[in-house]
Length: 316
Figure (cartoon, rainbow, N blue to C red):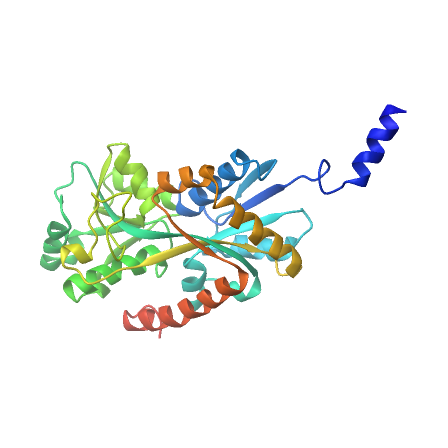
């Protein structure tokens, strides 16, 4: 009888004791990159804050992120709560034709954070300042091979080309070496295959804090309160800044009511000390955008980046 009454009580309150939040994060790149770091940090904070019972992660690289997008569209809601992390590259790669789908083929859920580009060298590099890199590039662009964890024409390439265009007026001459996700790009820098790494600030901090590398500059419009020691390009006389958002997307068949539930969940998360610990550790800036605002931001960025990519010769 006790078991009967307990079962009856559980059935009478399905939103409390029976409710479970298990979120599966789909990551379009390999381990060690910005997508991977953001997804795993977000999942960590959800569980520690008691807002999710369990989080899981799936790295599905390939096709410049297109493989993961196609998988999300195909799978839909068949496997429960699955959200894909993405960022500016979903806009850039669609514009350049590297992927067949765009953010319009998905349901934008929430904008989470802003991250910035960073330029990194090894601790023993002959280029121990941004000015030294620029001087070498002016002498011969072939002296500065730049690694990135994304394909040619994608974000790491575009950010570096913009920076060298602002510094020298010759961003089109950049020698860019693409790697599959940030982890391999870091390895390329540390092994000496390239002289400079173009990456997100959060990934750059991992390298710098380990003592393996040095951050020469970042693309924030102004110095960060959490890391005032890292110079911005603007502070070094290079008139260029770039902000990379990271956010979450659901499959196109996700009901609007479910998307609203997700958005409310992440809004609640971002007010917790557990999230603040993850945010500060990675040098992120909070950038909460609910679904409608997030979509509008994506549309604006698409228009802005089309013009930049045309000016630099990335697209016609």
